[in-house]
Amino acid sequence: MSASGGVKAILAAFLANLGIAIAKFVAWLLSGSASMLAEAIHSVADSGNQLLLLLGGRLARRRADKEHPFGYGRERFVAAFVVAIILFSIGGVFSIYEGIQKLRDPHELGNLWIPLVVLAIAIVLESLSLRTAVKESARVKEPGHSWVQFVRRAKAPELPVVLLEDIAALIGLVLALAGVGLAAITGNPMWDALGTLAIGALLVVVAVVLGIETKSLLVGEGANPDDHARIVESIEKGEEVQKLIHMKTLYLGPDEMLVAAKIALKSDKSVREAAHDIDVIEARIRAAVPAARVIYLEPDIYRPSRDPEPSTDAIVLRSSD
Image (tube, rainbow, N blue to C red):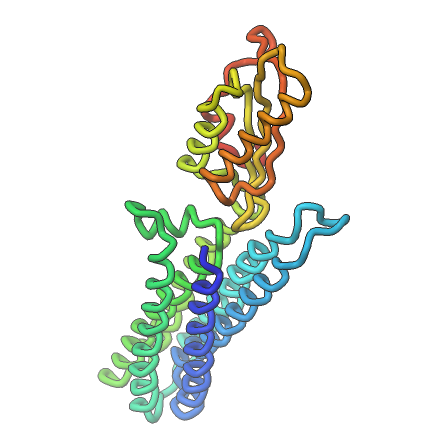
């Protein structure tokens, strides 16, 4: 992922959400709309989430040390997972609670033109933020992949998180506009409460999706099928290797992959020759998959009776394999 592109999308979302949150709180105070309060809390949560993503990126840049010999790259995964929790608890659960309270104790809304104007302006600002997220994501999305595949397969979590947040924010604004608008037309505050409940349900769904995807990164994902095939090809295509016996990969961070493999070399190789061959193979791997920065190759002699054929399932590689 382009670091500058990710930061640009995060900053655009943060500035939009901060300004929108202030306007929503003012509109809630003047109108008493539960949908506006839910949307204001949603925007505050989103603003905090963007700060968390920036903090995660900063912490991930720390150098490796004795306590963390593979570095701190997974700090970005942790930040994205915390974002999902905040979106679920603060945004989704609070909105559902507020909607239920308004259904139990409905009250007439006032100055409804204020939240309607604020929501209309917020929709424009969120659309601009979403456009930035889509533009930056399109630069790193693999050709031929859908947006669903991009969210599911991206190892750098910032752009998928911002993309989903912006989509949820835009849909939430439309739901709030519908709730407040119907309340204004019918004079029934129940519509405002229902809009609040719909916003809460939306945020919970998005939070669950984010949580599932970032949990997978935290547990430890291996190379995607395309990168896996490139690594295997890089190992096997030279004359140095008789056979790839087995291999495992693991993402240490969004931009850093660990590759560990046992390779069969010719039995008459000297130590110096074997070391040279390994250097050549490592160079081919890094040229094919630049994210493969940490590579451990164990030379061995292939013995069919002891070394089984590597299965595809065994090397599509998540850390639990």
